[in-house]
Length: 375
Ligand SMILES: NC(=O)c1ccc[n+]([C@@H]2O[C@H](COP(=O)([O-])OP(=O)(O)OC[C@H]3O[C@@H](n4cnc5c(N)ncnc54)[C@H](OP(=O)(O)O)[C@@H]3O)[C@@H](O)[C@H]2O)c1
Ligand SMILES: [Zn+2]
Image (cartoon, rainbow, N blue to C red):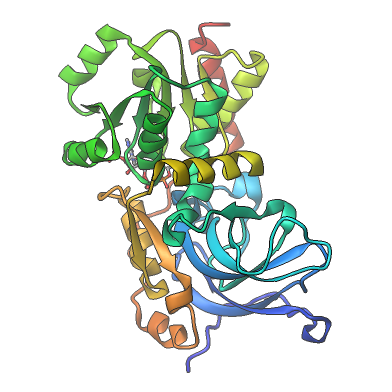
């Protein structure tokens, strides 16, 4: 068996109950993922030990693994991304009250790994009636869209647009629809129109079609725009579609997200463009319960861990199918994965997008302050 040469931090002391873990890690920004062994902390009195079953692959994983967020988080290699975890509780500490052995549990940090130790406060209970392979994407994509929908009062008849029909966007369409909103999907890919309608969109606008954008601009009918575009772009064409009191919420990880958060803070929560970051545990529990109640399931493609490099290529091309890729951790992250992953070709990624920098963020803040109707 070929062991990975990716270095890891010193192993914890197994004699003190540390948990042996197998994970998928990249040694650098090239994102060539290989299995690596390491140890997690021992299960403490308030902890839950999860046997991981699935982990969704979010576009943020690509941003982190390529070092684009280094200005915010620091560069950290080896990097084990992944924050859409779904597993089964196999042990609980003596003081745990909310979780019992056998529960399905979700979590939002910890990576592509086969075991997870989590304080029970950060354990999200997944209803047993909800398919576990669909649950990971709810932990990030679902709550990231649900939280601003709820915060900005989206409900029956609210006219909501979701920009970008990818992992986040498809969940946004489904959740907004379940909340009773009238939903417009805005995509630059005409071929995604049918998919967007299958997700529940009442209308689809192809953003590369000037006529369609002009019509929507004249109507100025939208109350809320949730923008999931991952890269730097001009977001003013979407602000122009808003009704008088409407808002655009930046969700994609670009300068607009940070600038929107800062400007909204400066404007006491009243700016026309704001940013929003994922959601807390309460919101995550609420959205998984909502998804279970309404039968909201993401369109997913379950893949073995040796396909991770291919998934990264797909996300870099900006997810042409709109699916959320989900790693089959239980079915493929095992001893045999060393060989299968060593045989997988490294990903063929273009040069990483420029990292988020402080100066770009300050530029974004100034731009938004000029745009901001309130200021
Ligand atoms: N705020 C948060 O807390 C949070 C949480 C999770 C993720 N994120 C961020 O949200 C972004 C989306 O994540 P995801 O997992 O949904 O990604 P994804 O699955 O790759 O989907 C992104 C979609 O955006 C559209 N798009 C991509 N590049 C574009 C461009 N240059 N111009 C216009 N549209 C473009 C594409 O949709 P169309 O083909 O339909 O145009 C694409 O499918 C990422 O930046 C991710 O890091 C933020
Ligand atoms: Zn995410």
